[in-house]
Amino acid sequence: MPPTLLCVHPHPDDESIACGGVLARAAAAGARTVVVTCTGGEEGENLAGIDLGGESLAEHRRRELADALDVLGVEGRYRLGYRDSGMAGEAANDHPASFHRADLDEAAGALAVIVRRERPDVVVSDDAQGTYGHPDHVKAHHVTARAVALAADPHADLAAAPFAVPKRYVHTLSRSRARQVHRALLAAGLASPFGDGAEPAFGTDDAAVGTRVDVRPWLGRKRAAMAAHASQIGPDSFFLNTPQEVFATLFGTEEFVRQGVSPTDDAEDDLFDGVTAVR
Ligand SMILES: [Zn+2]
Image 1 (cartoon, rainbow, N blue to C red):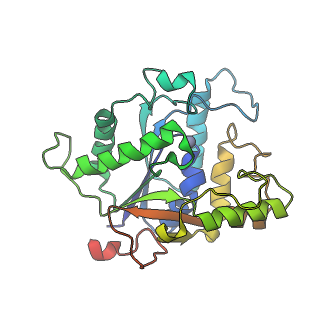
Image 2 (cartoon, rainbow, N blue to C red):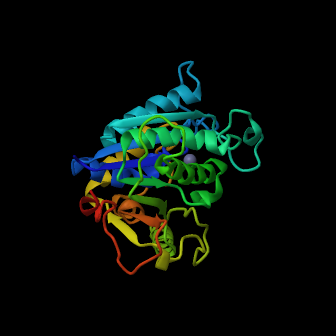
Image 3 (cartoon, rainbow, N blue to C red):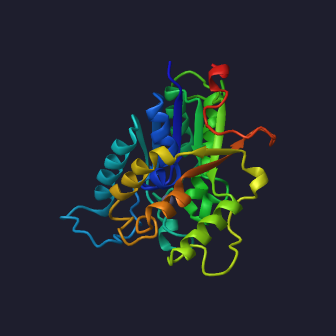
């Protein structure tokens, strides 16, 4: 049986930005790939000002997501059905249907059922800081951690048989790569998301980042998947307006921190490392 990679993302477009490379790489290697999207992205802005033809933004983003998942070769597609909570401090945080307000065990239970059905070898989500602090990204971390625990718990009253996920990761950006990206953007005369200072403080301590995956052969797919989210990632965004070589610096490596094990010196270059031995 081919291995399965399951990625959990808060909004349509996060899967392409954070994990587009590993999703395309896994699909190319014959693995089954699964994406769970927690919200409809209702609070996104129509940045590119595109004509929605009477559709709501969430309806439009649903089609953009389907196109992006087609580009990445994602077979399993699930939505948890919560409402986008908006940025921290916005009124949408308190919407009763928001992901931010969702009961942790209820959301984790829904995800745990998907985990039991898919039986993934690897699960990926945001880190506990929500990557950049967005409430839905923070929530996605906690919901995923709880779901993986529930899926394995024989006492959890959920559909399908219990399943222990062999490897769980959070996606991240190391401090050294944040600096590298920052310098490459400034050197190309482009704005950096990390400001115009000499050394951005953003990023995870390099010593904690044990898994770096080279996704350069799949950068074209990653870029096309990002571009499919045209309402969110316009041609003028720093994601897409960067020259090819800077884009490769930005996105040619995807970095991860394995969860639930103490850090070791064994650097990994693939999320499926050791998985065949496990199975
Ligand atoms: Zn997001």
